[in-house]
Image (cartoon, rainbow, N blue to C red; front, top):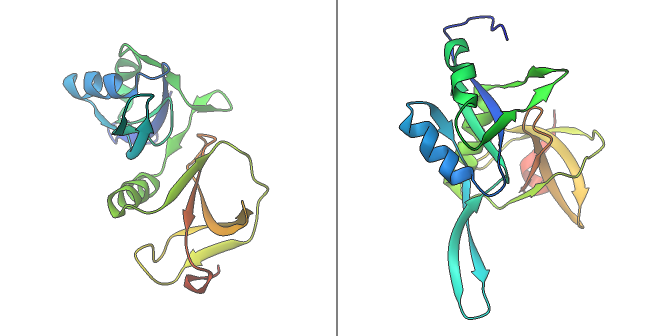
Length: 170
């Protein structure tokens, strides 16, 4: 791997072993790496009780902010499998996309995660509200109009509910 600016950290998505995202996050932080794991609160029903749990927004993914020196050291963390690649190379994620994901999680935006592939649609931009300036694609999904945000090459899509009156063609 060769970065344009080797000292400059970049965001990368990495696969984790199944159901070990929180443990991997703790190990990465303990080792001094910057990592991000978006978590959402959901009610989970067991046979004998109902409980709120925090679970990863995107199963088996964690985001790492590393420079070239730490790139290989981070992936050796127990529980990490590999970086998400595109054409054989780890695919960097723009800072603005991670910042947007953090903002959406902080705002408690209604989101839905899907690994379903969508055909490219009309490009839009949000013109009002807390998501002003956000760009995406308009898709029709389960009968509702939603903004589709593609997170780099992770193969995961995030659908955010936004009123049609708040968007316009880009």
